[in-house]
Image 1 (cartoon, rainbow, N blue to C red):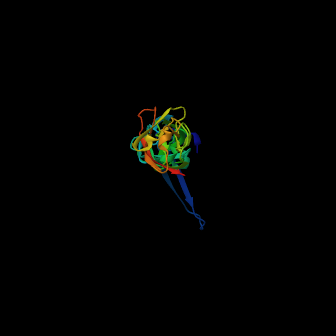
Image 2: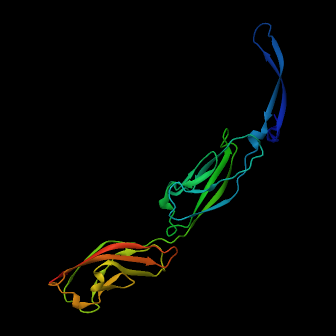
Length: 246
């Protein structure tokens, strides 16, 4: 049989004359003609998928829609399926194999400060003959940056009474994943401001030393608010307690 004939597109018809002989005495035989119709379009016409790009904001939640893969097929009526072959870090991306829909499956991976893209190798193929008749392409998912809110923690500070003006009372623990931003701290409730102020670094210092008298008042408490200069501007708060000792 000519193997090149099997690579033609469309239906190919082969006619074969078959003779069967037995081993009896005398040997008898019979003949028949077999017609073979080979639909080479199903085997040698894979669907086609090309490079695609999508974008999704960082910190998006699980289930967030990323986009839908597209492929072309010159064989009508075939059901195509999609698979992720490489690059799916920590199962970050979910794929509906039947419609090519991509979504977030592991939101922790989508952090711009750790990585700004994922590169997936995807395969498309007919459902009936996937790895015989398939095509692959790279798919890039860009992770866009958003303003991450700073994180600030409740704090207890213990200091001696009668500290002089501008003495450091302590530091409020905080951090921000977004580098290069400026921050502001404000006392928004309580009695902290009658004895203390706070720098833009989160450092609490004595602004009214005459108020730091253990016998008159030994506890200062309230809420501090932290903001950054990103957009949108977040408003985060934490509780602060300052205890005076003799």
